[in-house]
Image: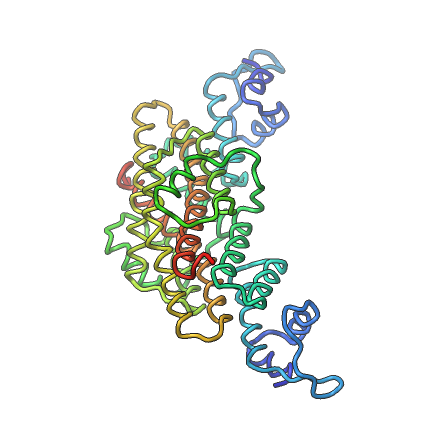
Length: 212
Length: 212
């Protein structure tokens, strides 16, 4: 199909599609004339992925590029998800600088206690270290058991999400579609998590301090 | 003590303290001369609370004012926490507009299933509705059981936080100190939650898609 039809089908303006082409996020179509090219399913899917990453996940262009590059390099899904996760953490917390200090032994102990297969130097690990440190500086007590409660509460949530992704992946020959859903759950899932956490806090506050 | 000592004790610059006085966040001290006033414990504590809300919780001045007003009005702790929570949600998600549409029956069903004492029109409830709606629009399946898993995972986390606040509250005649800790846990606690959620996802991804 032509670029104008690609635009109609996806609702993405032609100018935006041309921008993605110039930026190399979207591959050029098969040339059919000096100023025309033919776009197919592969372009349609990629365009949908880009829009998910931009509109749904709210990622900046540099991160969209990194995710697309991971998809293009046919990296294992786990690797592409990791790229997306780093982007999602940056979006939430800003850059989490590599720390010179030894990572909090409390987070390392938690990871080992739960037998989690995670990369110790990941943004997630460093972000957890920092949040824990900041809480303690603010006079808040977080025991190892508190961390365990948190981890045990979140494990089935994450397992459920990844099981759904795995199930999509099995029925799907095109990895793009899986990454597109992953982009949604990794960002909107965080919002649902935070919102339900607030509801749970509101309930706990009502119980402890009285709804008045 | 004088304003200069108040500044020394808290590390807050004199100019900033004067700004808080002008903005009415900090009560004026007892006048001891035409250009001098005496500041006491009450000012010290309030100043610490303001700095927690600004530096730790990252709240904008309008929200700091609302929290201070709740403390000043001797509102019940549950009410002040609610004010702070609304501010924390705005900080995370931006304004969550009142919706004309009926709230998602899935979140309402979850609240009733768990017997949560929450105000249905709260920002948290509306934010959960929106996140759920957005996930579904993005083609992600969230069943009532998924929501239940999330709620059950977060309940003990929130209960633990509020139990710690209640315990601080029992030993403390001054509500300001309790609100100060609450500001820390309501904001930094969210960061720890999100970071550990990312670790849990990384682990689940490694298990499902292989750490490669």
